[in-house]
Length: 191
Image (cartoon, rainbow, N blue to C red; front, side, top):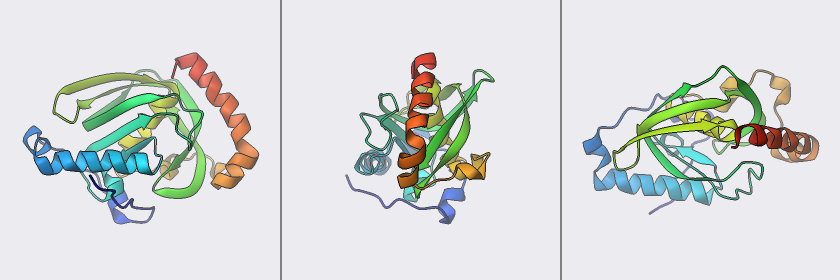
């Protein structure tokens, strides 16, 4: 396993639409090693998720894991999930407004509106079919990562540019209020 370099905002790879993989390509030792690298890089950077585009590989693969994450102390834990060729479908019109950050957009956060409940379909890292129902804050995390695979970054979804803040100012001026809002979302949706 190896740590991969994370692309930052402005790098063209973040705006590429990732290509789908075949099951045969996914099964190759090279692609399985890439998935290991993706997970290791996400964990090393304390990310809640990481998409292949973010490490300069525009293929439809992402990893999500939330485990007592110091960058996102308000996010509920979620087990390691690797998704290949994922598709997200809203399961209700209800939305939540959450502050998001991104490993590809260092030191910046802003509010983004996400669907409160989604269904995610695709494959696991071994090519087995996967269907997940995800709600609340965790649904936002999945939508954030799947956006990357479509060449979108969270800054594209910010409705009010006045919510942009550095990490330090988020912690100083906005975090307490957002944590209360996040707790209410978790209480309502269970995640």
